[in-house]
Length: 311
Image (cartoon, rainbow, N blue to C red):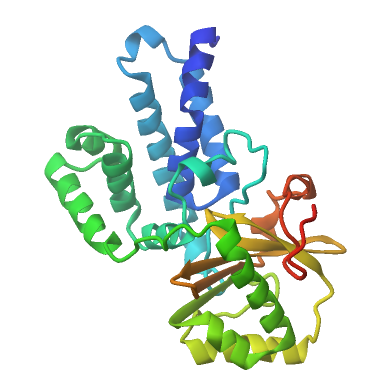
């Protein structure tokens, strides 16, 4: 039976473990399952036999993530269209898990770059750079030699070198840009969109084969502007309520809600006043963890009008 000390130790590490699992899997649901599994294993342990419980827990979560990624490999290889991590939406009263968005580096660009690494390379990098494990400890977790783990971390750092996050943008600076994007994209305003977009903008749309979404990643200012103006022509004004500005994986964005619930999340990377990337999540399976109760806590401006309101 777990003791109060088991509970206290685990709760003190829960957010850290959740941040590790999310960065390994990109999935909120899988993160919850992995953290719960780690707790069940920890609760059965004799604490006197564990020299450093936080590091023991980190190793267990990493192994569980590696096992999960191996079993999920076939599903990922057959995934339809662009893959994005499940969005983390920040509200005003977050619980421990929702605070990843504030306290952990879980930006979408970083998760996408991590996802291109092998599972072992991803694990070695996170344990070394985010959790300060030494190479002998990492070797015991991933089943490689310490020398190999050192090489894995070095290669991961080189691949991640170009994935620096966009500078943080305050809500006051983000609101006019998000508002202008919302209006120009709904009106099919090509010139308005071109003024907002950086030359090398990218658009990732994840529908998972479940709903309409662009299969390929769109790149380039004019191509992306043409994409949104084309949508405006085909669907002049989508039957969704006006979105509310929020933060999605730390980036400014909005959640669109229709009669049946949440339709999509849209996150923007903004640099020097221009939009450099747009990440649109439409896959209903990846929106399932979001609820209207969470959105009710978003005391954020109405993007259409720029006027304060609550959702």
